[in-house]
View: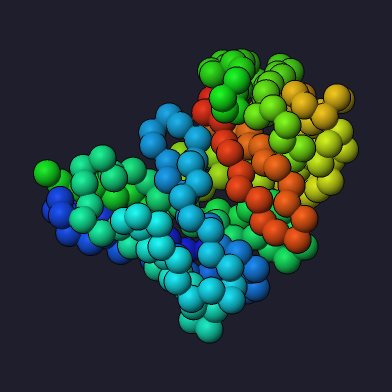
Length: 112
Length: 116
């Protein structure tokens, strides 16, 4: 069956360190993978999109990798700040569909 | 408005009642999506509109759920004979449609539905 897995346990790190979040998927062949941030009581906010033929994408302190052989994406936040504390969701498209399938998200807590 | 808006922000209803949830997308966005999010889970796709028509309604869980977008802008999600299991946050998103590409979806704040 199709599955998107994100670490359900919260990730706690110290301010200034690099946070790395993992998204693994099975039985999908996505053309795109996206990462969203969600704060409590709010809708998800788009952060980055990476295509299947891209290995890595960067935006300011954010970096995403996409390994279609391992079926895994890693999401990195460098020089993390307490304001980065939120839940981070990965999302895949399924071929031919515009609807996104989301993982359950990983909560990141950055300690000052 | 600047972003996607949803009303009401909270809705409490009794089992068996009918509810309507409204979404105002970003002006000019042709695509509109409805998702449902339960506590501790990611959003779950319900239905996608391209203009006025439902291009993909494969995520609607059963025939108690229905959505419309009559003028290609505002959309209403309708739930008949609500059940306690319908309790969730209902999220709406909109996007420009980019030919040949995956468009960024902009989400509203959601409507928290509680069925007692």
